[in-house]
Length: 325
Ligand SMILES: Nc1ncnc2c1ncn2[C@@H]1O[C@H](COP(=O)(O)OP(=O)(O)OP(=O)(O)O)[C@@H](O)[C@H]1O
Image (cartoon, rainbow, N blue to C red; front, side, top):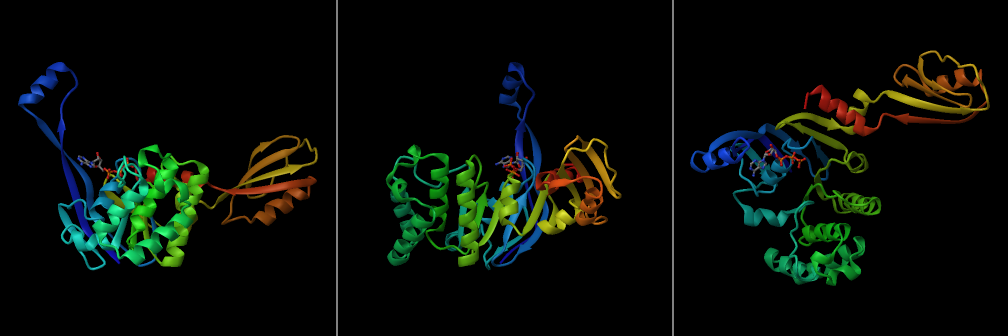
């Protein structure tokens, strides 16, 4: 459905040293530097996938989304989305995609949300029946009820984001590009947005490409991760495989009735011990949780046991470190 082949993009940016003298000098002799935002990016995405596109600040995520949505023309490479070259056949192409940039609005600031929706209906030439159906189902799913008649500038961030997502789906696109859709949202709004995206993908088969810094978004939604750093694609694979590579260590916290003498457990490292609680770390590839618990229970009277995998944030930081980004 989407394929990028050797996409490259660089920007020319003005550079000058700090200070008034330098500012004056720059008026007459500007110096430029090249920033390589994307280098030889290639990947394919199939219909119905939810792909998380991750990477540190300035890695090139937004630039890739802009290329795929036809807003930006790359310097090199080919991009094919549903048979279109996005930046060449923009008018026809945009009928097939929805785009949400979390940091920017596609809604008109001073008019009620529903007026923006009507304008979008005219721009996309959406049939009246389909439009009504979509507004009604999106209003229900995203709980837009009262806020549809409020000017955008009076909405909270969470309310605006729900309206942005609805606006991007009025024309029933097959692909949805989401650039940081949960940025700045509170926990409840985040969950609502995630649940909506999941349902949209499962029930309507919409393909979703999502950039985010929030790893819990990725955990909740994406089966596959593309990781970019300094403009280069560094990882393409499943979250499960990533966990398997870095996340085989588990932390086991055991609560027990008072027992002062620390217990050694074969194959596990004791991280802490107090008279009623101990924490162990073990490699789940080598030792089973059952054997750790059994070894412990031979010495102490266990009350409770909890096991945690390494948080996905830590796994991603480790991956960034490995690639020195
Ligand atoms: N219009 C532009 N003009 C000049 N440089 C740009 C432009 N757009 C992006 N860049 C540069 O290209 C690089 C990649 O930027 P991009 O916005 O794609 O990163 P990102 O991964 O989305 O980052 P973030 O997580 O901070 O949003 C950065 O070095 C950025 O400064």
